[in-house]
Length: 268
Image (cartoon, rainbow, N blue to C red):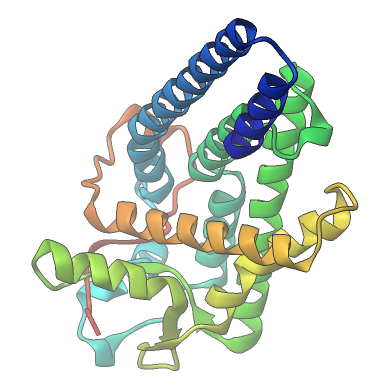
């Protein structure tokens, strides 16, 4: 949107006296500064809210022994891997759909969309923001549903297991790679995850062809899917590095399950 605004100011300056054009140009620069400051403050707010939100979504509170045994299996040798139960997978699905992390992400991205009026057809104000946050939440919900559905059909375990490796770079690389990999088979070996790669684009495509303005098409769905995939990467990095406190207030506000193992997991 900023290049468009600059083009409009340049066009107006050609048809106006020099002094008036300079005044408009100054006003345009002031507007750009306000927009960038607002975006910066929004980024700081998201970075401040996201860690506790991710932590709250990932905690387990005194679950029964069978649930814990299934979800903390990453602490065992790979040959002793136990697949999560259907109850654990259902709880994780509900957390990934309705938990604090997707709500925080939807609200944060809606703020950026609001700043840059994307899409402009939705306008500004509370009504425009409501449409944008609802749209982002819908994209995440559809993407998450498709990911869990495809994972169930393909027998993929898409829960996040922390790396047993050490070092920031290795752990970060493991978290990024885990976005498009999952555990397979009875031994839990890690391999490519079709559901992990495809699901972000399912949600974006549903939005473009479901409720976005008609001028949006396949290229926009692909671009939005890329952003969603990057959000998944950020979520895995948060799960890898955040230290969880199971007695925190945020953890008591959510379900007794986790989006991954709280201990270290195999790094292969």
